[in-house]
Length: 104
Image (spheres, rainbow, N blue to C red):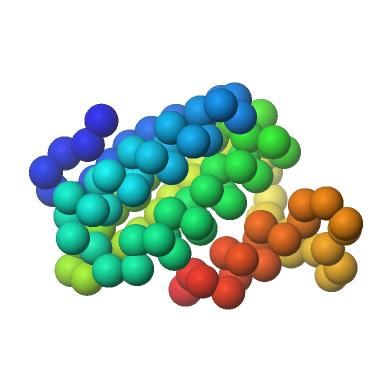
């Protein structure tokens, strides 16, 4: 669901819903005409994936595109800050590095 003011709100509790969130965000940012939409969707995808795989789901996801910037918030039930590992394991572990490189 989205509103014309530039805000998209979603939830994701299982891995299959990650693609749905990604698709909704891509469509939403395209309608809003936001620059850097592909980078924003990649950041969103990484954050939602982490929430679903490591914190039991993302109970509130917002994508807000206004005034030339995109704000992404992903809320889960975990406590404490997300941690970027010093060394990425063979499989996975690179998502927060991607977020760190693309987001402010």
